[in-house]
Length: 220
Image (tube, rainbow, N blue to C red; front, side):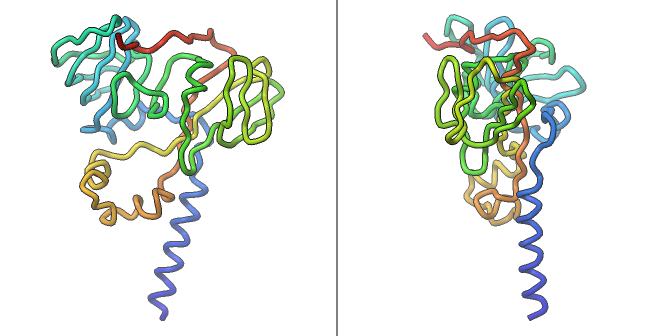
């Protein structure tokens, strides 16, 4: 009985930690890049190219093992290995080319169109802070050219200071493998529909920065 009670208490503690570990400040992918070694990533560069593959990082630079490279006009460049610099990158996402906002890990731009592409699932949310310092959290029910609606509250873009995407912390390569092999039970952090995975804060829009709504690596 005591052992069973301890298990219940332990699981309860895990639940509480999962709910409380909400990112207070913006999350930096660069501080956690070592955890993403071996993960499939998609990158967009300032020169208009995009690529998908695996990265190995050291400080502000790394080596990228590209599965394929897509040029700005949509053409495909053969796979290759090349050096990459942090300052050359516009966006990092999980999974697919072109790098999608719904899988966003890093972005250097402030984009209202990106806000409209956020697809918050399960516990994920959007955090909108107004110019008056008031924060609204929830799932965006509508994003138009001049406003965003969080639940029943409509907020004009002109009143928005920042928009952050509160998304699940990306899985490590080993966790991704367990999910792919349908063996999530081997990692307690993957239990309960990932309720034990903390949320991280990714900045998508900032009124203090120049707005950039140009498409990221559009297809032909």
